Amino acid sequence: MALRSKARAPRLLSGSSATAPVSPGAYDDGVPMTEYLLHLAIGTPPQPVQLTLDTGSDLVWTQCQPCAVCFNQSLPYYDASRSSTFALPSCDSTQCKLDPSTVQTCAYSYSYGDKSATIGFLDVETFSFVAGASVPGVVFGCGLNNTGIFRSNETGIAGFGRGPLSLPSQLKVGNFSHCFTAVSGRKPSTVLFDLPADLYKNGRGPVQTTPLIKNPAHPTFYYLSLKGITVGSTRLPVPESAFALKNGTGGTIIDSGTAFTSLPPRVYRLVRDEFAAHVKLPVVAGNETGPLLCFSAPPRGKPHVPKLVLHFEGATMHLPRENYVFEAKDAGNRSICLAIIEGEMTIIGNFQQQNMHVLYDLKNSKLSFVRAKCDKL
Image (cartoon, one colour):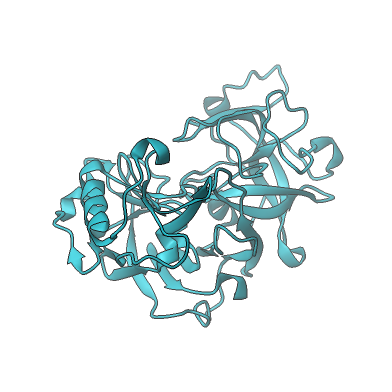
């Protein structure tokens, strides 16, 4: 867990909306598992950063000079000595265990589900967004020792979770939304903070809304009430309890920092078997595709796949084909793969959220979504 601090400086958006570009990150091996990068700037004058947009964590951090253990990035490291607005946060002795005789620094150590980790110091800076909008007093982590899986050309991570250190919490916005373009493309889209009323004017279908559920055991995450899954025309025989929270464990979360949706073993096997029953193609051996279900496809054409529908409380997510199937080529062989894997719990990943405008209504604790052309917003 990260050591938390309280910033005293004002950090409001003054009632106006702010925006920031977001674009797909890099990936390799032909498997489109990646994150989406939020583009903004830190400091005065502004120093550009590109941070993984992660609704499954809280801390906002970027790699900083002097970096002892850092992963490769294309942008320069943030350099506090170049900024006139850099400051140290106010930390009490309980939170940061400060020695009054030393310089007041607030150390943090923060880890993620994939075992990646960042260690450094919490600092305070001005964050700059699109069209000159800037917000002073944002607490962020200066990462000096960063290890794990960082392959999307990011400089750090922007936590968009429910905790006090997340970017939406610090900006004190009532809502935010993202609209991810295709993972396989390069087109940018926009993250919106405190939205205008005409959010869905470019929607491609009815807006769906479902409650956001809080879990005191894991207060960062955005939980949803998933009721069932349909493959083809078959509503799978899965009890709602398979997706529900039980004494703070299990449940279903939506997470922009996870690539492919994961399902608990029993549910995944049902989805896998029903999907395979509809696809009239040979299954590729598991040792060649790892955790993915893939099929050998003919050189040309678009093989039939069954529809996939997620049923939430009060909302239905009809996934378009490109949000749950991808094509892979290896040594001239063509395969189509299901972008869903087996996991410990149900996580709705970013691949399933492509070209879907997703609104987190924090004030009213609701999640809304609608299909959209995200590069046209």
